Image (cartoon, rainbow, N blue to C red; front, side, top):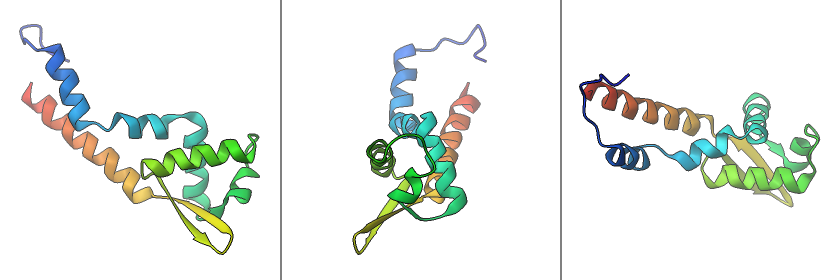
Length: 112
C-alpha cells in the first residue's frame, strides 16, 4: 500500500511495469486453456500433439495454436522426432520468470 503522503507518477509506474514485467508472458500462461496445458505437460513430461489433444475437449488445431503461443514465450519447448513434434513444459524458465518478476516487485516496494 502506498502511503498517502507519497507522491508518485502514474506514467512512471506504467513505464516501470512495461520495462520490468513481461506482461505478454503472463498473459500467455494465465489463459485457462494454456495453463491447463502447462499443468498437463509439467506433470506428464514430453508428449506429442495427439497425446496432448486427447486430454482436452478442444480440437487439435486449437491445442496446436495454444502450444505455439506458449512456445513463443518460452513456456514450452518443442522438438521434432521423425514426423512427430514433441512438446514439454519449460518449468525452469517459467519459475525463473516468476522469480525475476517477484524480485523486481520487491525492489519497487522497498523503495516506497
